[in-house]
Length: 304
Ligand SMILES: O=C(O)CCC(=O)C(=O)O
Ligand SMILES: [Fe+2]
Image (cartoon, rainbow, N blue to C red; front, side, top):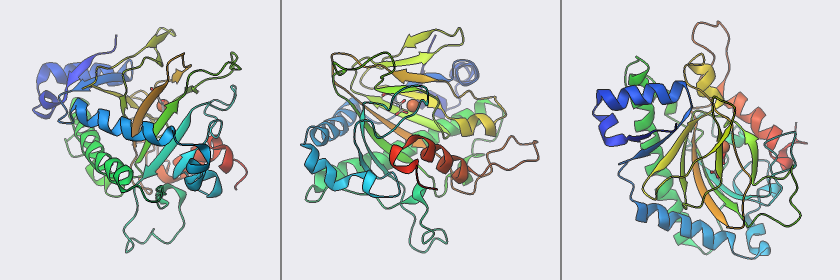
């Protein structure tokens, strides 16, 4: 069972919502949230903005093709990413943008892909500003959810805050066209995977498609109402909490209906040690993320 929680009540530390949160993060690893302050209209506007972009001809989208770069900013064509090594590359298209380091940050001139400059289609200020404003509001919602989780698992509310000073946060538009005629059993909109980072805040256009691997092993469809977001957790948060928070597998096969989803991958700063607290080892968040990106983006697979 995937629970829907009320974020305003979690902000207040409501004990019933907190209990549900503790259970959701540790068992299923998926939940939905409502009452975030981000309205359904706002999300619909963001999705419409991505939809217009994805419906442009390929030669327009190629002007911001990430394959021409060593990073993951801009447009990723269909089959440019393979999240499941046992399946074919995904047939979805994506548009990625993320955190840009201030120029006085010591990491700014190191050419790190996780902080690469964003690519925006020229002459479309509405696209850029709509996405950028949503990016910062979505990061604020993600931080509120992380604070509630900290409390739910018995830590101080601000215990994750400092790690998100320069977050390797990535906002993605996923575009799943109608499932292609040629698609076989090894073809997915996005193959089965766990997310790489900490917390994913996912908005969708309401079209079904997402399936989650439940503790029973079965795949369960998850749909969220227009004013709800789907939340799940990535590998780093699972390591970092020694498994107290679950990174759960999920996938999208796709259907006859086109679909758009907008995940914010809320990842900590590059140097954060996300190894289990008393393990005596170090897993640098930036190194983990860079390795996972290289494994999945087809254009980065050959880059050492
Ligand atoms: O489209 C969805 O519902 C899920 C997308 C997803 O899992 C991802 O982008 O990592
Ligand atoms: Fe995912």
